[in-house]
Image (cartoon, rainbow, N blue to C red; front, side):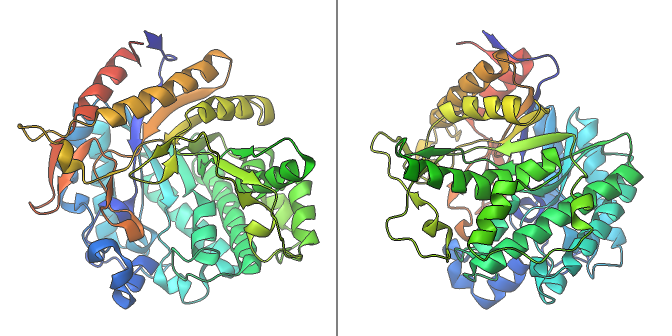
Amino acid sequence: MKKFPKGFLWGAATSAPQTEGHSLQNGKSKTTWDYWYEKAPEKFNERQGPANTSNLYEMYTEDCKRMQEVGLNSYRTSISWARLLPDGQRVNQEAVTFYRDYFKKIKENGVAPIINLFHFDMPMWLMEKGGWEVRESVSAFAFYGKTAFELFGDLVTDWTTFNEPIVHVEMGYLYGYHYPAVTDFKKAVQVGYHTLLAHAAAVKEFRAVLPKGKIGIILNITPTYTRSASSADQKAGEASDLLNTKSFLDPAVHGKIPQALIDLLAKHQLTPQTQAEDAELLKNTVDFIGLNYYHPRRVQAPQNPTLPAQTPEDLYEPYDWPKKRINPYRGWEIYPEALYDVAMMMKNEYNNLPWFVSENGMGVADEERFMDEKGMIQDDYRIEFMIEHLNYLHKGIEDGSNCFGYHTWTFVDCWSWLNGYRNRYGFYRVDLEDHYKRSLKKSGLWFKQVSQNNGYDV
């Protein structure tokens, strides 16, 4: 049997906008998702919008019991900024009541909550001022964090600031999948910089309010593998790592932006607007890192780059590795070996800071075709996917990497932005045609055994 360290976290992750529902009820104000769905519902899979998602707002008491039923000992979700502070200043007491009871119920079922502050759900009142493009977003986020720490710090000891901050930079300002859906490399860098400052400002507030707690950040890690060892391909790989990994990981752990990234941005006239006090603020580093891993990034030198770069593809181009294995339901490469490389990266380049796999999982469309006569989804493909990744994670831990947990995406099938409910990831199926009824999948039974045994048979 492959055994994991004592106290290892076996859990799952999700977020407020993807599960709660009641999107424009109970005092919550609009986010960019509510606004965008109003304006362009045709962009969303089968017009599945953010209004109801998985209706956790009404079903959380039973969902918390379900956490125990699949062996979770930890669980990450987020608070909705627009629900807690509908106008950025005034506390919504109904939200306080909801979240306090939700977090209590999680703990009553023997599950440790890890609470995140931001998961792609920008309040519309701030977006109308420019969102992460404007400096005001930094202080607004710090105030939100301080408010959350004060209201829920007696219930929650482990916090994170952002989930996958590079995603709202890429999707909102480079590739058009998130609102405001513009393509502007210079704006994208400024948005990323303000997000980084907002993270550091929230950590600073956390140290003042909850000095005995722990705080981290959740980053999506897409390890770069280059087409070849040529200097041109290696240069492309370095640019990819600087923009996609080191841009947030280095400041979060080391307290400063890597000089190579500063030089790269200057070369391409992408340097963001800064202030003298920023360097001091960035010294507010984290206690732990969460890394979401789904797939690697394979790159090659660009063939006809524009200088200065107009898009990231002027720095590195995607490389189609002929030996790749693909999840046909999601289009992503399956490469579990990368988890070992990530483990060694954390050990060797980031002071072996405590870290955990904060998301890993397999999205599959039309899962009903795998339903047996008793109504259970026989998702052996998901179990095999997790075992493959856990094997490499276990190897990394044996070689000294300080990993303390493995969280899957996700617990209950959830809404996924423009994809709606196209791809399912959960241990529980959600029946959209039957009042969001939950039904356990085979993978949930398997995960409970793994958690109880703190490992699994090889």
